[in-house]
Picture 1 (tube, rainbow, N blue to C red):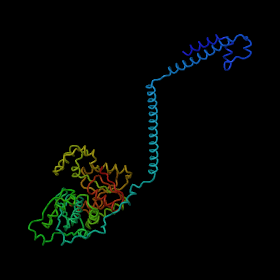
Picture 2: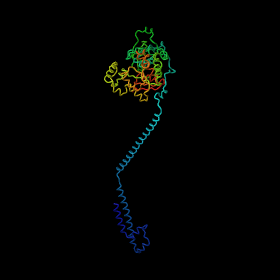
Picture 3: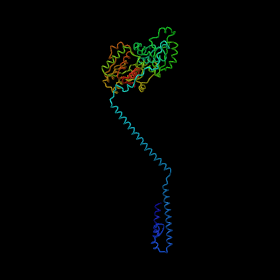
Picture 4: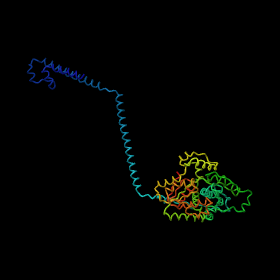
Length: 488
């Protein structure tokens, strides 16, 4: 439409006489004197006509510009929906771009952080590592001392009665029961009779307390905590109408249970016996009672002199052969494996033998070997222990002391560990003659192993049993060397 208007305007301009065109070119519509003279003085009407044509031209030109502008505006009229769509599209592109940018920045920042940590880790790893010692060992300290407001022990005459304890299990399980028995006697204000040990468990050891522990040291060391006697006085036994009341406390019972259920019977009957006493006291105790636990377990329960002498002799032999050695508590006896419910690759023979042993415990549930291993409940085999030690960085010339009982599978089971660490020793290899008096007693042999493991530079276990827990705690209290627990 604009091109047509331009052609029409061009034809209109070409039709205007030169004089009129000159008039159009003059400012304010006036004609110069020379132009007027050329046209003659009598041509006023002609000039007026030209002026009228000029006005018409100006009017037409204004209309043309207005119509052209309207056409352009009509052509440029855009729907609001399109405008909104374009705006949303633009915003989306901006958001997408900035999102990628943010994610890229985050990715790069993470890479920088990882590189920084990796470089720091490399710097740390380049420092020499002493695998025989822990730099954190000095941060542990014993806290078994009595508080300033700790009340003295109740005398035998003023006590609420006599507490008899029948411990249960092997040596270290019995040790736990003895420890808890002292604490129970403390808050019951009872006189504790030296605990009886288990003669009927799997180990068939008829050793008494005095055969394993220094009983006089035990009584004197705890004199400020609990009054302990070796037996109930005959006068008290004769005065009783009935034999001592026997009861079994649920496992991990709180002190309130003893106060509610045991104390009234003790006051009424004078003598109460608690049977199968292992883990019968809960862990939620006040600080002073927890300290008492530590005093009993780590100080009062000292082995007899003959056992200590055999243990120290083995320690000296190990330290003579090597300035440092590792002690491994290797629980791989048939009863341990049967109790775990795991499978160790021995085929049908292993399944049958362990299942027969497992029948000795009526309360054990049926377990899936696959599930138990997936849960990390299976003890490591001797071969796995050796692989772990090599992976930690111990050389194959490291000296090992292996504390164990009867290894299931015998030498065939131990062969892979011995190939990894040829310097392999046991108590039987180092103190054959000295051990002869102790051979019929599994708990006394376990006490010898306890001493050597306690004095070793590094202590390793293949399970999370009682001895592993007690020794790890004792070594931390004594601020000794590194403790490694590899039960998983």
